[in-house]
Image (cartoon, rainbow, N blue to C red; front, side, top):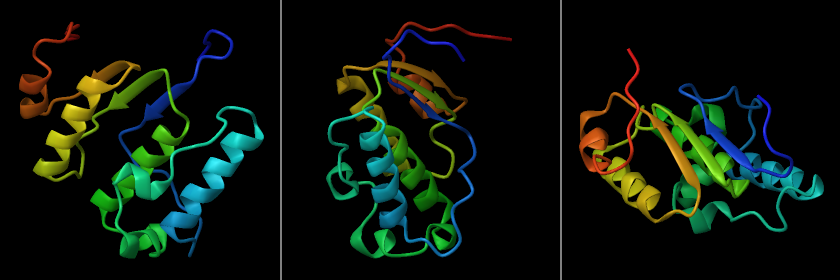
Length: 137
């Protein structure tokens, strides 16, 4: 994918990435944030705790042993750590609870990033009903 120089793009794929064996979720996030900082992508990435996506117990659990929903939230935290200006979400509600889907939808409404959402989730489609829409067949 080619982008304008300096544009920060965050992409949440449908499937969670393969996690390093035995590495705690909090450490996965910390290492990712340090990588973003060392590459000059962000000055300071938001902490895992500040994003409110994983609790303390989940953050200390090896990422591969988290539930699929928790792994999805960790993946979203990694995407958000890059402070994206363009956020591409491919089926963002996969494995998320109804409550978290509502929180995500509300947060999307308040972000300054340009957001592209590909979803079949009927509730999310209703909640984002006022957004510009491109239907593909």
